[in-house]
Image 1: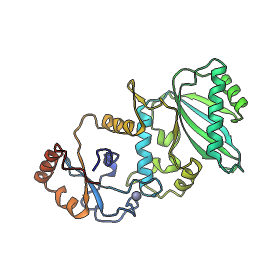
Image 2: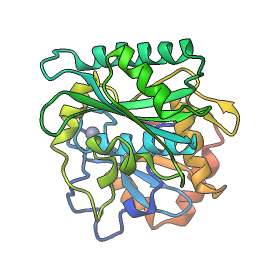
Image 3: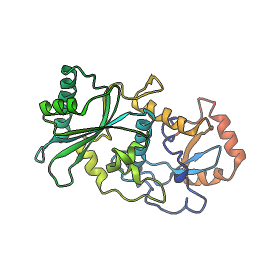
Image 4: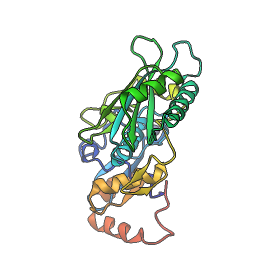
Length: 275
Ligand SMILES: [Zn+2]
């Protein structure tokens, strides 16, 4: 498999044990139920999944992976904008993107560099329109300046706060609508909202400005940023993921010698391109 295909999985809370791997779970992807991914050093087995955002089982996993990348960027402030599209707007995302762009332009006109933003739209609980959760890197923006900029862009009332403790974007600021905060075998629950969250966001987990995914001074594309975030979390512990059929996965999970051979074979470009 491609190296980026399975490496969203190394969360030990997700690891299937021998007992649970044969059981159907809410995490089982309906489109690829019999593909499993084995971490070859540990023998831990994970559902592989189809990795489509439209899949209710795979969407939370992809959202969590994205949230890890956002967290690795270590944004310094969070912004909430109360009204980025109206209740009757038929294309709230398009409207929101325009209002965000205008807000940022307005900030520049006011002499403030808006920095880099990453944001997701959510529907207001009382169906009064759409708000936005955003995390920012870069310089300080005063609440009053942001308010002026939002007013001129028609983006509602903003709140900007410093993030005092770098946390996890999935649960605190955004992506929870995609199930990112309910992920893990113990806490997983089906998300009614992920379909709606995707529709509101034009089929995307989040939107970001072009230099947002900068980690330790290096600018990455979003997929690269996800891989970097995962390797940072692994703290150098070697991991190799292997996606294969359920039967094959069951065979090698308890066979360290087979796993060692597969690890060695991953050095060969002709082997390991599955998935
Ligand atoms: Zn799936």
